[in-house]
Image (cartoon, rainbow, N blue to C red; front, side):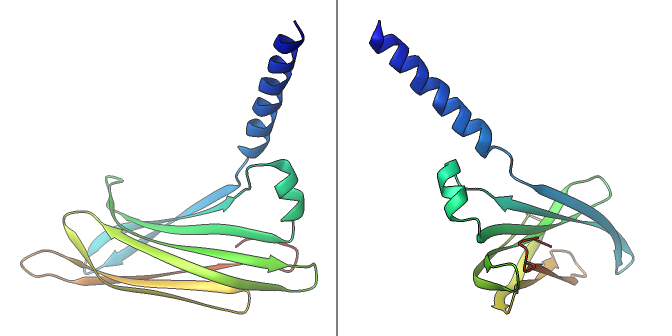
Length: 156
């Protein structure tokens, strides 16, 4: 009987930990852009990553990792290509600093990523990419995405 109660308490605790961790913050916006006479919709989303255990959240309360993704979509809502930047930030209430970053660029079969890069400085990180449409008269399109952290830990 004690083993059953102990097992039930352990399972209940695990569900509590998992439910506390599932509250990753996310926000997005959409912008209309015209390139070479074609209409594109640029959807930008920010997602903050959270740690798995509440204890780890307390320890890392002065550090955050977040990703900002830009999806270039056609008028039907299909993603043509995307660019994302992931930054890790430290902050203390009076200042913040980006400590590392990485980026990812990908495209569908009609587009090719020509180049992409990322860098960080101060409290922000930036990724840039250029994509080329595979067409008889091919053309290129460039996007840039910047993520930053305020001194109080607000990701923008």
